[in-house]
Amino acid sequence: MTKERLWEIIRFLLVGGGCFLLDYGLLFGLTEYGGFNYLTSSAVSFTVSLVVNYILCVTVVFHAERKSLRQTVLFVATSLAGLAINQVCMYLFVEVAGLWYMLAKIGAAAVVTVWNYITKRLVLRGGH
Image (cartoon, rainbow, N blue to C red; front, side):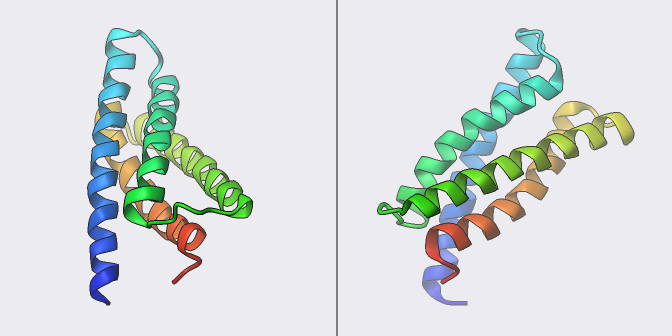
């Protein structure tokens, strides 16, 4: 692994960690104080976090300020797939496994993080 790839992964994890905290806090706030169902809260918090993550991934993580329309469309498509993965994981962890929704979110975030790194890197850096 090159030094640049290592720093890219570190930047990705730092940005992702911050976005996870945003997602996690919004999930809790919307569910506990907003009265929303955990799946609705999860979709909203994930989407808000995703927008922030997109901006930071493009500018800070992958340094891909000049994106083609194809890259943008692929980024959005992989992000929507990430949202679907998040929602399925949340449902399975809460409804099937019986976990508390806040604990389920940690597991869902782990699964989506792997998906996001692989797909965002391929989209924004062309797999390099």
